[in-house]
Image (cartoon, rainbow, N blue to C red):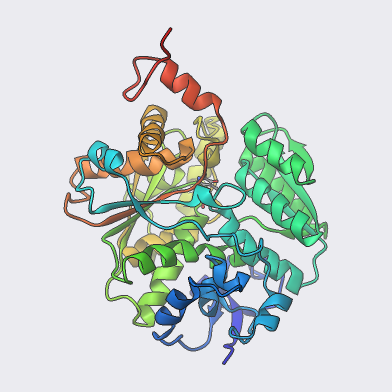
Length: 445
Ligand SMILES: *Cc1c(COP(=O)(O)O)cnc(C)c1O
């Protein structure tokens, strides 16, 4: 009972379609693409997904991504056929997405002034390469293999390259990673080297590295696994799936993410819209995106900073001129994105339009937090015995701010996504040795 799948341009007026075996990430007019499926999966699959948690030796049931394979079956395989799964689906032996699900964290709830029963945090850092990127890399590399790619290519603030490197090494593929020189955490850079990836250093920031990597791909030097690749977006849909499954498919009021290139935001919006259209969930959770103050393109555009109304998806007809003007102003001011949370230090979020669509579909909101707030957020997660990096601290700090402002109500149910594990040990050492920090526990002589 395999379904058909195609690629479709996201632009309402264009709506060009391509076969699923297409490796391009844009339509011929330059718009982004979605994976779209025929038909709607039966709700009885909810039971099947639960049964698969008792995996019976199948790595595709053990995987927190492929356990939901009927909902991302762009390979068009018989999902019940283990041999077909083995032939088509790429997995790190079932470990991607396996350990991540929502947890209650009382200290975090206290910090956010929320009912501890109603605030759940999902640590995606508990993925094999240490970030949520593995969810989308499993699907992107599956597609790379489907189209016969020998080399995968990415630009990265660190976690994408760690994940791509790990999958490439497992699959015996080559991996080229474009990184902004000196701007990524050593722990992440070390992973890319360790997995045998070819590092390509670019002078500039992440936005420059992305441009350079896409040029290389345009010249036929590999297959891009950045989140502009629509197949990345498919695998990351399992992040909200796992949250929803934990809640018995009762939608929470909010799902909260840090915003970088906005692949997660886009993916969550697509997942929720599909589930809603199939009748799997009765209401749409609202998506909240948290930008760093120093890398706040989405917040500035969406909240209409600098006058004018906020930028909206506008049912597929967004004011793209406003985006161009914003970027031109950024360039003119020499305004490079500035935050120590390098994973979200991005000025030109590649998935901006899909993110606007997600915000419209979910009646979402966007806020910003300072570096100091993010470090507090990161640290209070630690006090609950969980590990996350500074960019993930944005989720906690953002929830706190939205509760303070009354946007999130104290009795709302909230799932916050902790996107990655701590890979820069100097940050907690620095934080805790400065007694003026809120949660600091300085060393004792
Ligand atoms: C990649 C990354 C982000 C940004 O996610 P987007 O989907 O690009 O918005 C946030 N946090 C961590 C830890 C990341 O690795």
